[in-house]
Image 1 (cartoon, rainbow, N blue to C red):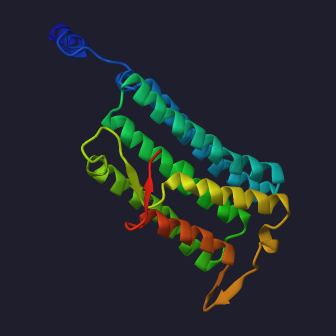
Image 2: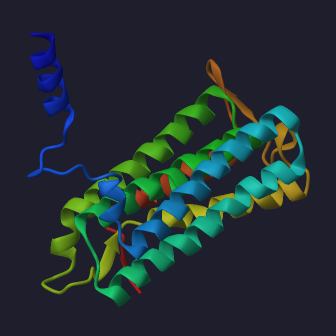
Image 3: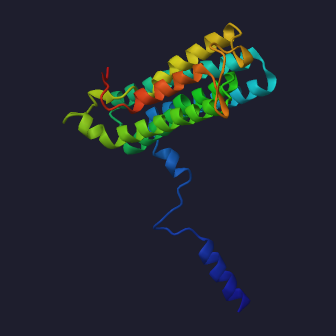
Length: 223
């Protein structure tokens, strides 16, 4: 009886010949462009981590490196699209990866940098969350309307609203402010007490950026 049980256990442990195990099968499905997209996401994650480290250390270099990760992510974001078109390897997986990477690098990353710069009032947090939500909504809308925007071609002709990578301009402003020592309690524009919470006027840049991203009347040609 025990011997037969051992045979049954051994048989159950053997892989099915018709369905062999595929280790790292998802990675095998990645195209070259997808690895550039993942590099974009990694830059966004590094930006968040460096912003968090700046909050703890107050080392200017941490802040500047966090800001620098956004334009580096933009380079990878441009390259992944060009490589995908060059190799004719565009896919639904690649499009979803690109959107998720962009949310991290150009949505959460700049918002974390803004918080580290001193946008920590109650209304600041509302606007930072609004900015990230607008970025997520803009990317979701793009994904579901891409075929319509392509107007029968194989490439999108224009953007509805500003692309989320335009948030690189906000990180440039924050990097300049940090370089001039205008962060923390020295933020440009000071702070306003509005009702129960504070608002730094600089946070309005995030509100403007988010609003432009979800605008349907603003059309920008895609180069």
